[in-house]
Image (cartoon, rainbow, N blue to C red; front, side):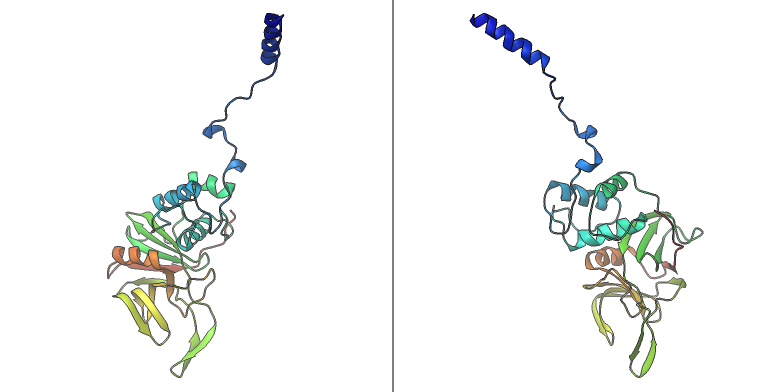
Length: 236
């Protein structure tokens, strides 16, 4: 009787379909972690490593979705024609694995140069015609302001320039403090700032995050071409 029961149990087990183990390569996109500022863990670290490899993040991949990671996500999403957002969802993961090639603003520019896109609020450093640093930026706000008895509109000038002066560390002027400044026309510079909003918010300078400014200052020397343009709007 016992043997008969064992045989019956075995037959029933064989008749029930067994679940196949799921592998990482078979995982659908919607199974990937959706990340937001403040999140921690290996998924955040994987995101940071991907952003570092492609030149968007210049701080350590510590597994914490911090302010620098948020700026890098902004830059990545904008460079890929995606809507500005803090969220890293399936669409971002997919694009991070197979990113769209960044279209230069100046196709005939020097192999080593800086490009500043006023529409997307992006700063890109090229080396040997390849983008190696891509950063969120905040440029001229386009509003009227007065300083020292002179009134003007806060604009980042469009054109072709060259870096003519460098100023390491913090410097303070009548319009505020600037870090690691790289001047390319008049008093307008690319520089680090503790406040780099998601919109054009400067008096004309090109603000970048502090961690980016450290790297940017080491890369860009006096004489480097700087091209400022407003890119045409394209569909994602």
